[in-house]
Length: 362
Image (cartoon, rainbow, N blue to C red; front, side):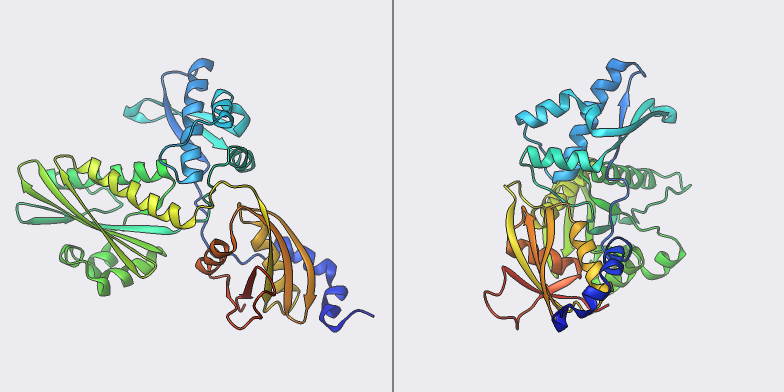
């Protein structure tokens, strides 16, 4: 006779395993364009496509690792020489005044295997959403930078549009899930240039909820002399405010620098470093029914830095799971808590497993 803790599992094993693939409730947003890269080409020739696809793979590796520079190890050099092994679709597109682009859809599994062979960091495809609130001040006039291009034909608006383009393009190159506010009627009623300039959290945080923002990039750029700009930037993340300052004549360079700094910060917190996969055991309470069981295993198997998942035993509502992963126990616990899927079990017996957790309530 099965033990009481296994009663529902033995009766409903098939249903649980079906739920494993169908009932995942992972709420973190996957970046939809992460594995799509566009690079300019001179022509549709095989030689031009080969050169451009190598460049695209390098961008893909920067996105997947969070690194601004990808080390040219032997596996990386070999991959750059044979980039067609890592994508499953390509096409060409005319970009109006900007010429021809090669569009490549990379294969996530092939890219992940390359990261592992090259011992590169793995920055998962589910990432923090960033919304950027920026205001430019020149000659006492302030203007917000928004997602949409307006019909206003002024030098200030043109400059704001250029800053927006620099932010968006650099964010895509680095794999940062960044967006700018719409500045539609709702935003205009709630957020003024003065509120962004004053970095008023009581205004900006509520206004950012409609964008499901996890992180806020708040910046003010002021012309202090002809063609000289001072940038003051803040990253609001994890109940912290990180401050940075830039200066110089080129606004676009300053905007790109801030994207790089924020990407480096988020990757340092969330990417799992390239190391040999090791064994860890989880002890997870709160697994009350087949739906919990299926959702938990589905969630764990969705994580790029976990190589294998195996259930070892179940007792009551607690499940013991053996993992093969490149993450250590502390980082794994932090990532689970950041996702909101599990949190550390402070009441569990010390030493019962490498990591004691509680599955979130459904």
